[in-house]
Image (tube, rainbow, N blue to C red; front, side):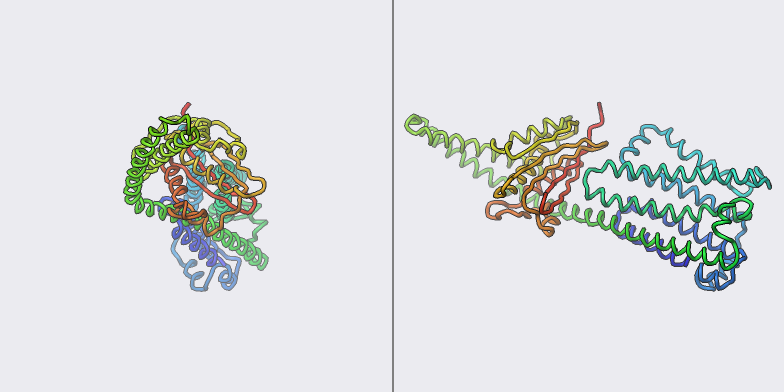
Amino acid sequence: MLSLILLSLILSIIVIVIFSSIRKMILPSLLHFLVIIYIVLFAMYFAKTGGLTIREKSTLLGPVWLVSYFQSYPMSADVMASIMTALRISFCILFFFYSLSCNYTMRVFFLEHKLAYCGILVPLLFILVIMQPKVFVLLFSFDYHSQRIAVKASDILMLLSLFISYLFFLVEYKDIGIPVIRAYHRNLMLSAFLLTIVFFFFASLNPVTVFQDYRTVRVYSSSVIPVQGYNAYMRWWFVLSSCLVLLVAIIIQNLKYYRYTYNRSRNELSISRRGKDFGGSSSVLVHGLKNQIIVAEILVAELSEQIDKCKDDMPDAYAEIQQLSNQISIIRSRLDVIYKSFMNVELKLVRLSISDLIEACRSKLPLDADSLISYDIEDSMIIADKELLSEAIYNIINNAIEATKGIEHPHVEVRVQALRARVMISIRNNGPAIPEKIQQQLFQPFTTTKNTGSNWGLGLFYTHMIIKMHFGEIQLESNPELTEFMVMLPKNRVR
């Protein structure tokens, strides 16, 4: 049974290593590795103690040869207990930093208030010292009452440390505004929670009981898990089976979370590569289009001069020529923005309020668009290039408007929500759902749901590039009732 538990932990590490980057795999892999070492030491201690037959131990721990190896392995009780104590504290410290790495807000807080680390680390290091066998015996000798108090205090401090660390996962879960990311963060949160349960079960029974009898120090543990007899065997079998079930659940949760992050990273890399391939040709394309637009501007200017002489006789023609001239100027400015994004020039970053950004987007929309759109703006400050970012958000809003054409009650909602560390701009429409196959490729260049004769499928690719340049994220959710684009941007925290 214990062999299956170790195999499950190794499999969980393999899932993490395969589907995550080097930076993201280190802490969770180390946590699993610490649990593996701890369980191996626990198995060694269990094999060396009496109370169960060799067959019962083999059922619980693994093959007979493994039990024999554990029994004969030369390791003293003091050394075993010292290593177990170090592993207990190391797990708590690593779990704290792991939870901190998953929470932007708390990470910023601890960077600004470095003394706050002492509140977590000092008590754990204190436990590491007093629970060493030699120190423990020196301080408490055979005063069982004092020993019980010390053991309970160490367990409480460990639990408190793990609880505080787990709160960081919950705070981050509350902070995430994009539902799909929140759902996958829930998988990570559940995996971390189950791993701490498995670890703390073994850690709460040891290492004091390696050199002290269960009944003298851990009265509760000795009543729950007997140390000898058939009753002890059945209860251990049940407990270890429960741990195995929890570890299977951990593997499933890790697989869901890390596969999502892996696919997301792979998709981002694919977009980036196609963007680089497309960037060189786009500059040639934009340059050629601008030359044609310059020719069109010259022709419109000449035509305007001729009509100007008789504009009283042809007022409609004169007005249309002016509109055509304005449209050509808009197209030229848009091409300049697109060319700028592909040439990867330096952004003109300024402190910008979300209200000003949305207002800049509204100025680009058709005059009749306001009748379709409702706004719910919670103002906040960001750092952005106003021209580029407003063009990106305008693109999404304009796509939402086009998606609602032809339906009975068209509606587009633009909502801005200020979160702890980010600002989320949500653009919803009640148009038809985007097919799942298209969703997976929607931000790739030349991907579109519109008529390819009038649309090249570059709008959302361009939008994605700009948002990435602002260290933001964009997500899509689409179903028959609602299609929603969610843009997450870092909030400017300087007042």
